[in-house]
Every structure is written in C-alpha cells, then in structure tokens.
Image (cartoon, rainbow, N blue to C red):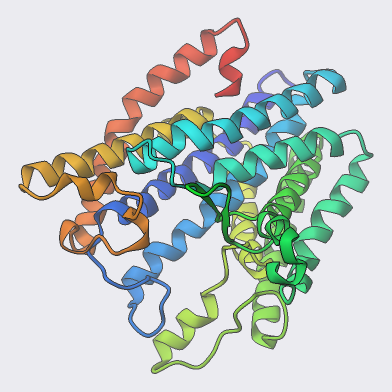
Length: 388
C-alpha cells in the first residue's frame, strides 16, 4: 500500500462532508432571508422550488453525523482505545456546551436564555458520549446496534412523552421532538431527539472499517450499499406502511403527489429519511474514492474544519441579516428575538432568488476564513484544536 492512500481516502470523506456543509448554509440562509409565509414542505402551499431547496438540505445532518462516526473510527487507528474513548466523551460534552452557549448566541443574538434549542451539535455531542462507551464492543456488535436503531426506531412512533407522566421529558430527549420547561423562566426545545442519531453515528463508526479494505473492493461495496438503500427507500415508501411518521398521499396535482412521496420526516430522522439521504451519499463516496481534482480543494477545506465552519456560518448569516435590516431602515430587534424562528421572516426577507444570491455570497466569504483556520489547525501541536 503506498503512502498516498490514506490521504486519498480522507479526501473523499472530507469532500462529501464539505459538500453537505455548503448545502447546509442554504437552509440557514433561507431561515433568515426567505419571505415565504409557508413551510417549504407544506403540500398545500409549497412549490417545486421551495420544496427542492428544503429537500436538498436534508442530506446535511445525517451525513454530518454519520461521517463524525466514521472519523472516530479512523482516529482509532492512530489512538489507543482508552485515549479515543476519553476524547469522544470529553469532546461530546464540549459540543453540548458549545450548542448551549456559543451556537445558541449565534442563532439568537441575545442572552435572555428564556428559550434554547437542542440541534445538530447537541445531537452529535451526546452521540459521541454514547459512542465513547459503544466503541469498546466488537465492531460487528456496534454495526448491529447502529443499524437496528435506524431500522426499528420508527416502531416507537406510537409512544408519546405524555405516556410517561412526569418522566416524559426523557422521551422528548430520546425520541419525540418537543419543549421541556427547565425552570420557571427557561425552556429547552429538543429538535434533534438523540436515539436515532446515536444509531447513525454508531453505524458511521462501523462503516469506517471499509476504509481498511482494498480500494476496488470498497468502491464496489459502497456502490451496492448505496443502490440497496435507495431501492429500499422506493420499495418501503411505495408500500407506505412503515418507515416514516407521515405516509405519503395523493395531492391536488401530480407534482405535489410526487413531492409528498419524497416528503420524509427529519425530526426525528425516519428510516426513509436516512435511506434517501445516506444512500446517495454512499454513491458519492464510491464515485470519489481514489480520485482527486482541482475543483475539489475548496470543498475539502470546508470538510476539514466542520465545527469552525458551522459556528462561522451561523454568525455570518445572522450578521448579514442584521446588516441588511439596518440598511433597509427596519426594526433590527426582530433578529435578536427569541421568537425569531417561531414565525415567518415575512417582510424582512426576500424571494427565493435572493436567498440563493445571499447563499453564494456566504460561501465565498467563508472560504478564505476556513482556509486560514485549516492551516492553523494543521500546524497546531497542542491537540486542543481537535475539539473544534
């Protein structure tokens, strides 16, 4: 095996991670800049363009979490088990802390803390804590646990937090999105229930074993996995009996019926949601494995500094929204309110074409910042920046 192989392998993973992070920014730009008064997945009001803008961003969270697990496995080749377990545990808690402080401020630009939200960084953090224990099990057992959670957690959809009485908050954290009153003045909305995301990360960790195989064999396996997952999606969605909280249904026209077919549940991520997002991602990894091309380098840069990118892009998008609001002479207090995401941006926003223009500008502004930080991280000898 030549010395370039590990780098090539990592490039394909970093490219996919960077690609979905670029797409992720589109969803968050839409949150702050779209003037649409409807949910893009509301079949009664959406159109193809708004639905596509939302659907394409569905790939971000599952790939982000899955590859975090894969990255943990690759780290196991460089670290002793005890060191890796400690790192996953402490970094997981660090990410939870960041979600509740730095990330939360980036979303709201206030310190009232009457409301907080457990989102993707929260889920990754706790999934890493879980993985710090799961990683001691045999690789096949980790795979069975992760895949079983993905396959069967929708069997729990009929169970609700109220069924557990005063302990219902635990179910909200694990499987059913909802708000929990922490104190008389503070509530926490758990948007990313943990159980399925733990399954995704554990599966990603087990998946990392493929990168110990010969390249052509791995490419073939990745292709078969991808085709199998996509095929399973169409079969299960067609049967329409299991795999998603909301079955698809015939709509007012053929187009909206097709959109309903692809309108899968993200909170929590259903089996069908994970099949149609991770399946195509396997095809991308198969196609990119062992290949390098110049245009991939900027995308790979984003993929190598995921946490830095995530925080930077939230602050940049929010700052741009505030700046545009000031320039337009409108009430900037709208963008510092706890109610920001409980209502439509409305008159503060722009048509969808404006959202895409801002998105491109955000990516162009982020690239030199992330390139600089990637260099800093590469030169770091303390190991502290690995937590970012």
